[in-house]
Length: 339
Image 1 (cartoon, helix red, strand yellow):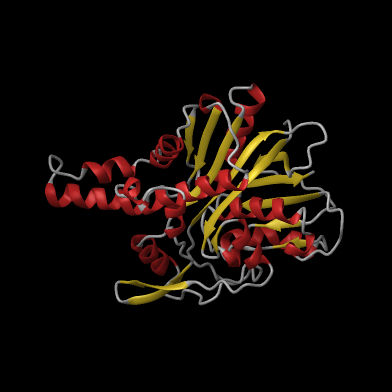
Image 2 (tube, rainbow, N blue to C red; image 1 turned 180 degrees about the vertical axis):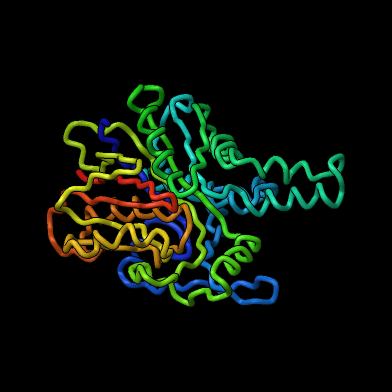
């Protein structure tokens, strides 16, 4: 693939909103899950606050937009703000969003309205917000982009599948820039499933590197990157390599940023890497367990190229960071970010 420059970073999660909030969390600011009520049972969850979206958009324009789409809009607006609000031909900007669950809360609310009111009186607003492509639609309409838009849903691999699509669009010259992001939300039904999946023994703290113990805690958020083709001598962080599949070839050197997030089923894939002696780091305790977690790692890696200490390395001149994620099927995703 041709290197892709990261022009802007937009993130929103339990740690807060924006580049500065993520950097603060990486340097030691406390990030604790909230306690949420699930049918009378208190469970921890990493929730994200979408209130900062009011700084980017008129509140009236947000009336009909649900939580999941607001998260996506917030990440997209933050990425553009971080890039300095660059001027593009609106028809030459693509928008690609990956999601594991989609707008789960709204989808279930629509099904409830069908069950209670019948298909003739079901909520049209809930229906329009429930489709997976709703986030892309709101982003393109709100930011006035008229280029191609795409939603990718492949659960754990949504983030890298969407990234591969963004790379293809830019390689083909179909667009000049791609606003790429991943979004997922928490809802009560997910918490209920989480409780039953864990047998009622939900951990109070996410310990991602304790691979033989289930410590996963539900998370939500959005992570967006503004991507452009890299130019000669470009000083911006760059996506240099993408791999996805059952076999992942990793370099013997360079720090690994592991997206292990407390699941025993996927943790076993990381055990050999942790035992190899190669430098590793994991940041999922800052944003929780969800399909969106690996996209946050991409943002962390881009920040760490300028400040290696953010992921536990004080070495200067860090050339590349390798972000790795394994899904429940054993399939993996590898993204190399460097200069």
